[in-house]
Image 1 (cartoon, rainbow, N blue to C red):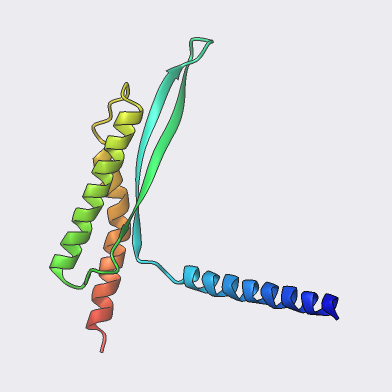
Image 2 (cartoon, rainbow, N blue to C red):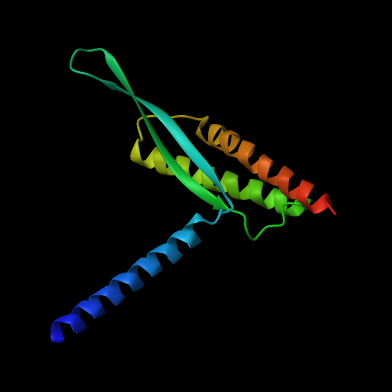
Length: 132
């Protein structure tokens, strides 16, 4: 009797755990309103054979825009501002981690890459707001 009660509890706990996992997965599967900003840099380092090797490093940041109304100019401008701030922050972090490499185009390239996705989101939101 005691054994079946213990087995029954384990079964219920296992089923409850599976239920929580499924619920959490459903929440995580919801589309999130983010734009990925990626700052990249190529590092040149001398190798023992005196031929330079190139290695790329990058950092990513996410800019959320669920709180913005992208159908308005103010919302779109705020998203662009957030992307520029995130790109600047990521590039500063790369500068501090790799101080010997100076890359003036880091912020510009990071913003450019993220703006394509941001503009798609803005266009989609504006098109949806015009639909009856």
